[in-house]
Length: 402
Image (cartoon, rainbow, N blue to C red; front, top):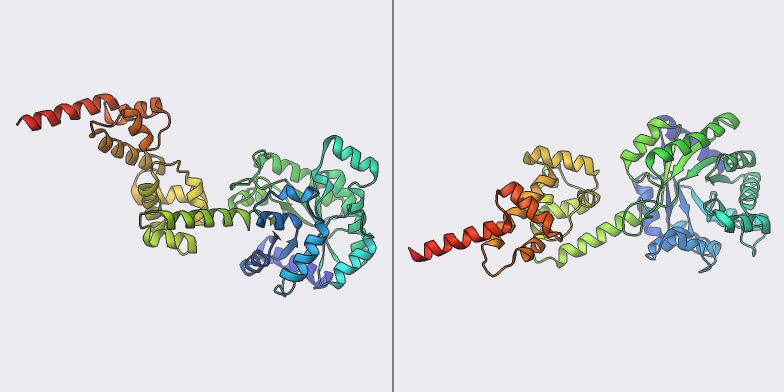
C-alpha cells in the first residue's frame, strides 16, 4: 500500500471511529488474527519474534541475532504472503553497522513493506550506555536519518519517541506518525515489573503531543503500551490527551496467549469438569451469567490456590471491574466475600476431622498465613479454628455416648 493511501485510510478511521489500532507482531498467526480483529497497521518487530519464543521484548536489544535479518525473514516468509489489505511496517534497527541505510530502505520497499518504524530504538536506552552510543556515532540520530530517507522514498513512517526533543527531530524528518513509547507492557507472566503509572504516562504523552500540535498539527499521534494494556486504560488516555491511536505488542499476542494456553492446559489437567462456562470463556461467547458460573466453578476447583479476579477477567476477555460488577449482581455478594465464605465453609468441613491440625486446614483452604486464617475464621464463624474443632469433638463424643 502506498503512503498516501495509508494516510487517507488512517485519517478516515480516526474521523469515523475516533482512533486507530496498531499491532506489533512476531508471527503470521498474530498478524492474521489482529488484522481480522481490526488492526489498522501491523509492525513487524524482532521483539515480537522473541515474545513468540517465550522471551522478553528486551531480548531484541541483545547480541542474539541480527534484528533486521529477523524482521526481513519473518516479513517475507510469514507476514506479507498472508496480509493483503493491512499495511506492514518494517521494524528497522537503523544503527546496524552492516547496512547502508539508503540501499537497505530501497530493499525494504521493493520487498513489499509499506513503510518503517524505528525499532529497536535507542530511545529506550539511557544512562552511561546511551551516552557512549551517542558519542560513538550510533545513536538516535541514525533513526531520525532513516525516517527522513524513508520519507524521501515515499514510504510510510512511524516514529517511536520518548521525549519532546526526539519528537521534534522526528517531526522535522517527516514522520507520518509520532508514537510515544511508554515502555514494556505490564501484565502477564513476562510483563515488566517496573513501569510508569497511567497518570504519569498521561502527563508524558501530553507534553510530547503539545510539541506535535505546535510543530505539525496534522501528524497522527499514538502511544505504545506501557501501563496501558486494556480498553479501559485507553479510554483514560483518549479522554485526557490528544492521542488518536494505540499500538500494542504483548497486549495482542503475549498476554492473551499466556493466559489462554495456561488456563486451557490447566482445565484439561483438572480432574473436575468445568463444563460449558469455561469453554465459553475461552471462545469469547459468554454472557454475564456465564461469567458468574465460571467464577464459582473455578473457585470450587481451585480454592486451595491463589485466585485473582484480574486473572479470571483476562481469560473471560473482560475487565476486572466489569467482571466484579456482574458477579455481585448475579450473586448478591462480591467476589472477595464469596471466595472467603467458600473457603471458610470448606475449613469447617476439614475441622470436623479430628486428625487434622488447624494449620493444615488453613493451608488446605488457601491460607499460608495461619494467623490471618484464624482471625478471619473467628470474625465470621464466631469461634477460633481450635475452639470450633474442640466443639465438634465434644459434639461427636456426645453422639457416640447416646
